[in-house]
Length: 115
Length: 102
Image (tube, rainbow over all chains, first blue to last red; front, side, top):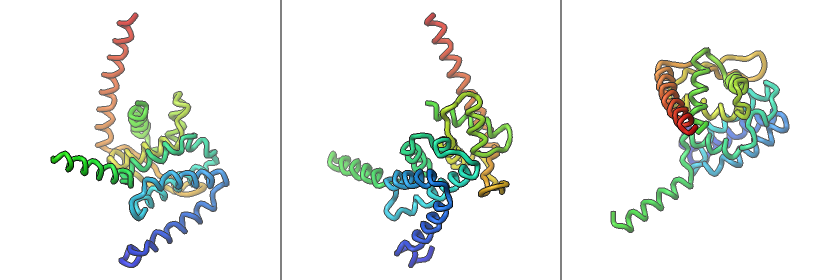
């Protein structure tokens, strides 16, 4: 990633385009699941969303492998996509906005208490 | 609670022979964990990978994209030993409790 890409995020746009073209090759129910997964993953994003890129890549890999096996989406992900996503983002150690706010809040309170 | 237990189970399955996500899920389903889905196993595998308990090789499959194969390493074997030790302790204590009640 060079400086220009870092500032404009054009590297991510490129990566996302390649994700999208991979998604298009999946069966329809997988595409629907992908939409749900990406919607549920964004709350775990950091400021730029770069932390999510390897996660997206991994999940897409899982979906591709499973689709090639001829499994149904239900068999692969179950019905708790939200839980799946938070487990996923948690494992990857992606710090989210919420964590940052929580940290900030804790710090502020600690300061107010004069510690 | 099941999650920590499942992590041990997955590690045990990997320790027997090099395997991949789909096969692990099927093995778990076959022994009676019927509601375990591949997504669950996937998140466990990520954690095992992050904790450097497994070695990963990518191998091409007959159809579709290459698969990730998992094999146990020395750190993994040590972790697995600890897991069974803990499990032995917990299950013996729980059985003790159950028998006292009756």
